[in-house]
Image (cartoon, rainbow, N blue to C red; front, side, top):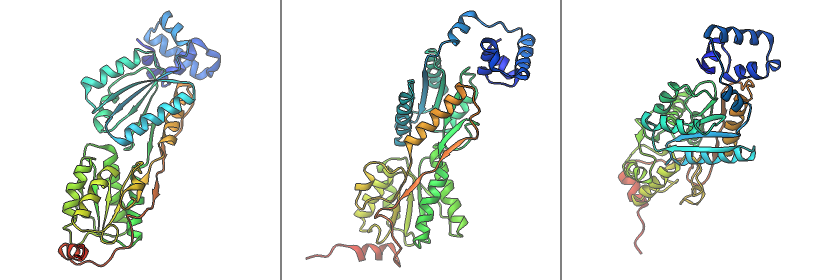
Length: 345
C-alpha cells in the first residue's frame, strides 16, 4: 500500500495524508480521523526513509511537453520556466515531439526520479491526456491544454474565445463569406479554434463553409492560399496560426489578390514577425507570461494542499492591423485577378 492508496480511500490528497503523519495539528479532527481509518484499513506502514525525504522541500518541478515544434507550446514552456525561477523553483524538463506511451512513461519516470514536488503537462493532443490519466504519479499534476478535458487542475488560454474574436471581427467589418484555414485535426488548440469559428458564424446566422486543413506550416498555408485565390465568394479568411498565414499571404500576392482590398486575413498567435508581414497581420495575441504564472500558482496551491478553485482560462486579445478591412463587391476569382494585375508601363 502507498500513500496515494490511503489518500484515495480517505477522499483526500496525498499531501493531506502526509500532514496527518508528520504535522497532525495542521489537519482538522474529522479529516484526521478519516485518514487514520484508511491507514488502519489498508494496514499502511509509511517508510521512514520516505518520511524523511518528504520533510524536505526539493523546490524542483517537473515539466513534460508534447508538440515541441509548435510555437505556442515552446512559448508556454519558456513562460512557465521564467515564472518558476522567479518563485525560486528549478524546473526539470522533458520534451516530446508527440505523445506516445513508449516515450511519455519513461520521461515521467525520469522526472519522478528527480524528486520533483509536482508535474506540469503541456499537452498538444488528446493522446497525451489519455496516457496521463492512466498514470498514478504520486505528486500533484497540472495540465495545460485547451479542451477542458485535462481535469479540475487545468490551466489554458481560451482558444475557443480567441477564434470567436477573430471571426467576429471579420463579421463586424461586413464579411459574409468567412473561410477558415484550420490546424491539423489531432491538435487540441486547432480543434478549439475550429469550434470557435463555427460557433461565431452560427450565432450570427452566417453560412458555415467546409474548413480547409493545414499542418501549422507556411507551406500548407501557401497551398490553401492558392485555392482560396480562385474563390468567387470568399472575402475573408481566419487562419488558425500566423505561420500558415505567412504562406497564405504569399499565395494571394502571387495570384494578384490584394490584402485587404480583395480579401481580409486574420491569424492567431501574434508571433514577433506578424507586425512586419506585408501587410501587417491582424491576429489574436496569447499572453503566455500570464499563463506561465497561472500554471505555477495552480501547481503550488496543490503542493501546499490549498484549494485551487475552478480551472483557469486566460482570455486572448485581438490585435487589429492592416490585413483586415471591409469587403469590396467581387464577382469571380478570374475577374478579381484581372482587376488587380499590375499595369504595363
